[in-house]
Image (cartoon, rainbow, N blue to C red):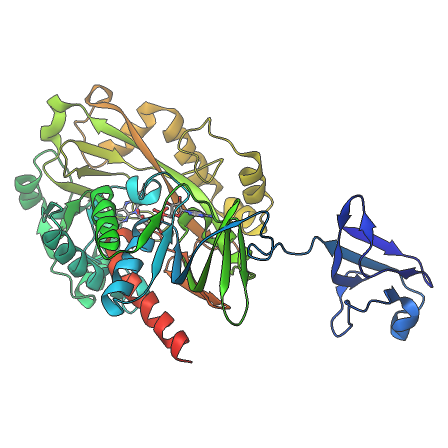
Length: 478
Ligand SMILES: Cc1cc2nc3c(=O)[nH]c(=O)nc-3n(C[C@H](O)[C@H](O)[C@H](O)COP(=O)(O)OP(=O)(O)OC[C@H]3O[C@@H](n4cnc5c(N)ncnc54)[C@H](O)[C@@H]3O)c2cc1C
């Protein structure tokens, strides 16, 4: 709220505005934020108290006092006290809980999830690929955590009865201008310790008879899995140790001080010594609730799939990927054999009009305005509008989607495809309009935030969890 204070007039520190008692949260003079002036002075504020401002107009910003879940006993029922609360029951939050319990089995832990079951957003709407780590810049968090995370995930699945298949994949160059990028991917793969071989078009045809390309990389260790199954298995591990996964519980308030964090869930709350934010598509908002300023905003990009009809399954034996555009963190439309049967084709990448915008008609005005008002998004859109229009065209016209798939499998026809699922990616975009490629982990008082965890974060989730737990243990020791 903004007030203008005429010179000489005194304004009370806590004026009544309507029925709400509001306190001064910040002071701006001629657009410049002022520090070092006590705003809690019960005498109120007057230009005379600050001689340098005499003669100019002040704008005072008022905000309601932050609600404190525990002190407002009438409003919130305390559900429990914990050592650690993890916000978000996607694969990253669950894997972090699993790693915390492995490192410190006596931790009293709760995972808080807004939906009625775990893994309902990105973790349950993805391609189900166990990525090898071939694409990522050597030394980046993505490269390091994907490599170690894939091995951890394979072990976790083997120990917990979740089916995986190391079926291998091919990355196919379809024109001479893609050969340089193919070389770069292979160099990265080798630097990251990935087993990968360059193959010629005749070997490509043996592996994937319907695929056409002038050269390819074969990655034998790439696998497939159902990450929803993984999430359910992780939930079982957490609950088996007597810890809790609290579903149907959306975090809407966070108050941290030097001794604890109070987390509000509507009319309920929990108190915890430490908090980890793994809220995926809402990670920036949860970071803000915790009092931090996110270095980037989450922009939701929907990825839509078609499925091969059963009579066309023979078009793809395993996984067929294009050479990705190095300007984007997305891998381009590909063919993926699913572990539960069937073949998915996609995903594309179009702006979603809601953070859970799985269809064009899912529109949340607040989410959309949040994206459109963000300067970073506008800069991104200005730079890559051609690409954006192309993706929207492919989304609207099946024929255009098929044309993109024909680059890899020329014989594919519209009749080979039926509409499939979709997923929404949480992509962090910086204020300068850059798509942030690497994983990003941030900290506020008594809280660690996984701000950016795009693909291959499902593959890497147990390693991300380990990385975050190491940070937490360090913070606890300090
Ligand atoms: C189309 C698509 C294809 C992909 N393909 C692959 C792939 O093949 N391999 C791979 O490794 N990765 C892939 N990824 C990426 C991978 O799925 C994600 O990186 C990963 O699932 C992120 O997990 P998460 O736990 O961070 O987020 P999510 O799974 O989105 O979980 C976050 C959870 O937080 C909850 N939440 C949010 N706000 C609150 C709140 N205020 N209170 C309580 N709970 C809250 C949400 O309900 C949600 O369940 C793909 C992603 C997409 C979208």
